Amino acid sequence: VQLQASGGGLVQAGGSLRLSCAVSGTLITTNGVAWHRQAPGNQREWVATFAAGGASNVADSVRGRFDISRDIAANTVYLQMDSLRSEDTGVYYCTCLRRSVRYWGRGTLVTVSS
Image (tube, rainbow, N blue to C red):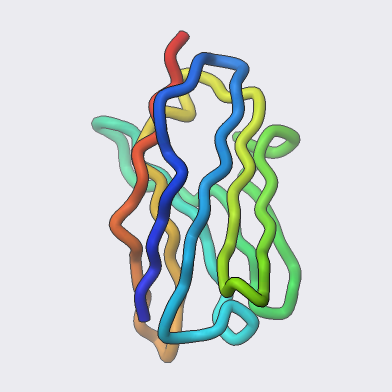
């Protein structure tokens, strides 16, 4: 199983970015995919999940600003991030759990300038 995150970059506060997580080796309709992030000096935290069955959820800290979606044909999960704040800065990772093994992508850096 491999996950490839992309779409990060430098954006001004209030701006938007769309992250992509391309999954190979398993189907996103079989294994849900989640986004986590890690800010400098902080622990990694959960951001959003798109479950295999179609349910989705986002963390309270980003609700109303971030949205998670998926393209089944592309086997890709997206994280649309709007109204970005400086505290959203960090490395964003996508992950999935398959047969009790958690797989992580390499992460993509998001930097929000104030």
